[in-house]
Amino acid sequence: MSRLTLATLTASLLVTLPLPSAAVFKAPPTAKVEAGQAEPFCNSGAPPEWRQAQVVEGVQIQESRSCNPDNPNDIAAFVKGTNNISMETLMDTSNVAADTLTLSNDIDKDGDPDHYIIKLEIMEVNGHSPDFPGVVPTFDIAPGIQPSFWVFTPKSRDMSTRSFASAEANPLLRMPSPPIRVEQGDVVWLVVENSHYFPHSIHLHGVDHPFMDHAGEGNDGVGQTSEMDIMPGQSKTYVIRPRQAGTMYYHCHVQPHTHIAMGLAGMFIVEENRPNNWPQVFNIGAGQVRHPSVAVLEKYKQEYDLHYQSVDKELHSIPQSANDVRLVAKKMNQEYDMTDATDDYYLLNGRAFPYTLRESLITVNPSEKVKIRILNGHTEPMGLHIHGHKATETDYDGVPVNPAAQVTRDVYSLAPAQRLDLALNTTDDGLHSFGSGLWMFHDHTEKAFTTDGMGEGGSISLVAYKDYVDENGTPKSHGMDLKPYFTREFWQRKIPVWQDHMEDWSPLGAPAGTMDTKPGINAGNELLPPQAAPAAGPSASGGTAPAAPAGNGGGLFSGLLLGMAAYVLYLNRAKVMARLGQLPFLAKHKQ
View 1 (cartoon, rainbow, N blue to C red):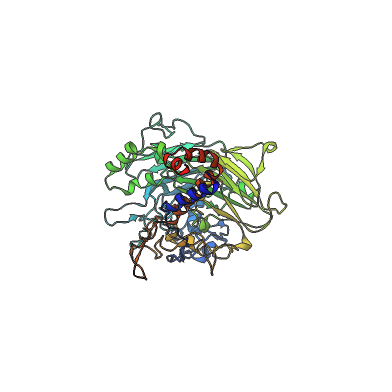
View 2 (cartoon, rainbow, N blue to C red):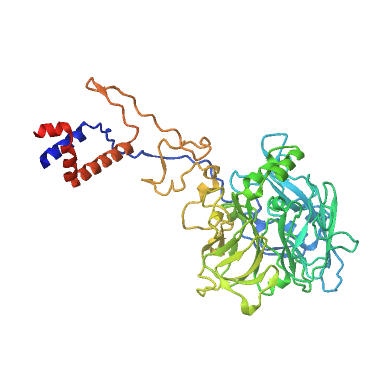
């Protein structure tokens, strides 16, 4: 059999096989997805004068460049005590109760009080309401995102909302539970009034405290070993006189696997004893401490509290699922399995990006030292990274690090519940600082960059030099537009993340037909149904046009396989000829 015969036979076989009609791929056009209305960067409504350095009731209050600064009257009350300020100042606070903080008895005669009576309540935010479909009181961690939380909060004299006409939470009632500061060696009565519907307690983690108090009652906050839990409507007083200064921790020890995660945890700081010290007992929302203690000001210009937390949205939706406490208890204590939990939201001082930029900026000047206290409230280890700087680790878990062993680095590791004190030096020497700018700082665990899996999100914030921040607390960024991050649609996965990067040509937008391009329609990131292929019908010439192929991938792949088969036949033509010669009809033809 000749090569020509084999080639002719192979070609005949290929011609007689039905080949799928090939289709030329044509990319769909780019569709513009309309974003919803972006919130202004700063919409706190705080009076501009709140950001200024000032003196209230004799209390020196530092400048704040935050969009959402603390009420200076609150700061005065938390430094002097509600019993040592005027009624006018008390009425101008954010509903602080008259007995929230009582300071008295200068026992050591050094010019500051040595007996603290601190009163806390336990409250719920973003909880279920039987009166309307929404949650109340509201506290957004990012645009439109409202998981439920439980928090310790300074005792309030009024409603949990800002007003009768608002569902927004009172400024005292927010994440995280507030950092609490006391002075080394002072007598502290920490009174917990359980205004919540579940039992609770406080464990003073790392804080010097006796197991039993002077009245013979448990003082460690553990119901199984120390004292019965604080039942709803009851109160409990914890009595301490801490002998060691440092950054500590307090949290509920009832069902701690859920109660800590729900928000019942905060920083507890024992300041070094100094004459005329007057520490700021509460730092609402953490962040900048606008009245640093005398001991801190001996070494540093400023001080910041950074409280990192993570949120499993399954857990935090349970209080929103029912108005019956029994059902909430059953779902949380018997049905919820934390070993199957997945963290969805990553928070810094109770917020996720971009809201972290509103109130958790570390604003600095060149050539100054800043004290930063960090708490890892996550369920997993974290690695904090500061861009453009290398800070020095001075204390771990409230214990000073020997100066000879102190490490200067740019990633700082913390296990869950650990605390770390950093000295941030902004001297532009190429080591401690690379110079002025807007330098990001964040947990370098990659999923902490996200909010429910969407990036950029999570606990990102900035070390912002004051030349790069305007009078309203807005960073003067030189990069991409931040407006999409301030829309609900972005976090609902409706907006292509790079849609607006190119004005005339946007290959990174949404392919037409794959997403709804109107705001408020597409609830998720699922694709819309593809366009149906046209059915077979009459052609322009009067015949019948074949139905369009379902796609071009199958035709191209089949053609590739057939081409390979023909090539293999050619390479093995001798064997194929021998085989074909054995076939009866070919043998007869050869004869």
